[in-house]
Structures are given as C-alpha cells and as structure tokens.
Image (cartoon, rainbow, N blue to C red; front, side, top):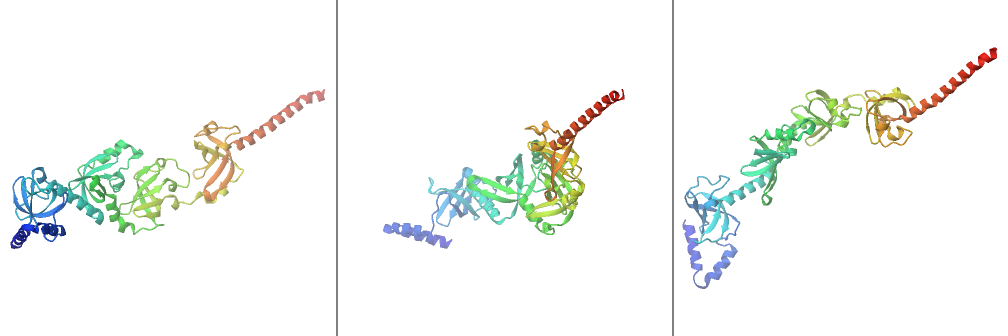
Length: 404
C-alpha cells in the first residue's frame, strides 16, 4: 500500500505548476501508468462490492466502476466476488459523471470466453459441447456460454445419421434425438467478430482412432459387418469399431446399379483394405473373389450369337446380362438398322434377346454386343428358306405333269 501511496504522491507533485506537460509526457511513455482505451481489457482489484455494483482499483492510480447490466456476467466468472479479488473488465468510458472509469464485467466475460475458444482452436484441445437444437444441416451447440454449430459432416461415425434412402425428415429426427446430450469436440473455427463458432466431433474420433488404424495396412483382409447401404456403396464396420467404405465399383466384378439389391445392413462380408487416407478407410469385396473376366474368352468369342437379358437402358445403349458374372453393352447404334433416339424402341429392360458379340476386352471388363447384326443374320436366312420352299413347291407341281 505504501508503494501505491508514493506513486500517487509523486503524480500529485508533478501536477503542480508547469509540470503538467511533463506528467502528460510520462503518461504517454507509460512510466507510471498506461492509460487504457475504450474496449481494452484491463485488470484490477475489487475495492468494494454490492449486489449490483463494484468499485475496482486500477494499478493504484485510477478507480473504475461496474454497475447495472454490465455487472452481470454470463460466464459466471465473477460470482461471489469480495474485496481484494483480482478481476478483468472491459473499458466502456474513460470518465463518467463522478470521474471514474466505466467498466463492464459482461463484455469482459464475453471477450474472455472467445479468447479461451481461440486458444482451444490453436491447441486442438478437446472440450465439451452441449447439444441445444438441430436442423437438417447439423446441431446447434454451446461451449460454455457461447453458441455455435456442429455440422453433420463433422459428426463421428457413431452419431452420423445414415438413413436408408437419405430421407431428410428421418435424418432430422435422428439429429433431434441428440438434443440435451454432451459431445466431446474440437474447436475448428472461433471468430468473435462474426460471432462464429464451429466445432467438430469427427476430429476427436480421428485422433482417438490413429493408433488403431495404424495396425492395418493396404492388402489386409478383414471380416466386416454392413452398417449402411447407399446409392454409392456400402459402409462397413470392422476391428475396434473402425468404419470404412466399399465403393459401388468395388462391390462385385459385374455391374451393380443398386447396392440395396445385393447387400443388407447387418450382413457379414469379407473385404480387403485397398486405401487408408487419414481416418478414411476404403475396402473392396470383389478383390477377394476371382475375376471372371480372366477366362471370359473361354466362354465367349467374337462373332458368337448369345442370348442375353436386358438389365437397363440409358441414352447411349442397353446393358445386357449374359450370365451372373459377365455383362455387356449394346450401343444404341447397334440396336436397330433404323435411326433411333431411345434404346427402349429396340430393347426393353427384362427382355431376353439374341445378340452378336462384337468385341471382348478382358482387361477393361468390356464386352460389346449388337442386336441389329444378330437380326441381320436371321433375316438373311429367311429369304433362302422361302426360296427353297418355292422350288420344292414348283417341283411338286411339275411331277404330275411328267407322269402323264
């Protein structure tokens, strides 16, 4: 206390006579006291406090007051204060009607919360987020007293709403079921100026999974359980709750249009790990099965006429199943002699038709077919058969005349 008294006395002595300009210079240089600016966060000690007002000593040189709504802090940091306690407050006015600095605990608490969030973002430390609401894009959360957002894309595999068919209403229903729960998250964006707080649960999960994922490598075979079936592939779980994706192109050697026709949730299937990218694991079912295209030329040859079932058509042709493993394509130009714009004019899904094999590419898993060339051969045979019939009929008619 003696040091503060000496400092005040020295300032008073400087203020006498023509020493005021010297005092101003000393203040500017910060020798005794660096005067704050509006918006600064300053430290001080409580001098006196009541239910709605506190007086704060600032470095033994100035006195500040916190009162009214500025006395109440959402962060609860300033509850149960008593004289002598150190506090931080935001400067609102440099001098009020009584010559005191007007301060705010409310703003200071808000600033402190955002500073803490910025530190969490920088350090990558895990914190708690309480789920307060949900929309189709994700979850509204609170970290401490700051509201933020947890996007669907940043949910862990445990909470990610994989819904058959991607029904948005069911997704929202799943997300709303998390309201009231608390998730471990990492802060990935904390911008006070924009009042923007974004957190990630997936980042926490990825960190926890690093050591487990490190046990696996490309080429490993694993026993998996199907957890979700989508338009683009199948999600599977294996090991210690690791999750991976089997893309639609890796489900089977033959063409698959809808994975739901072949796989069901809960089904167990062996798979091979084909890529590991951070926390993302990609697998293949077909890698563990023999490639039927290796011996395709033993079953089919160019020029051969074969029966095939039309699986589907699209603007450029018809996909045809020759057997359960080998599928081919009849380009729209090979469906009819007449110009057509819609393959359905010549071949409809479900029809069994005869095709001519035009090309076989085992390495690319491609087999080209022609419907029109198959029909040409049939039509070429037909006139010969009709002509033969005419000749036979003519001979039969001439025989009685010869016998007469």
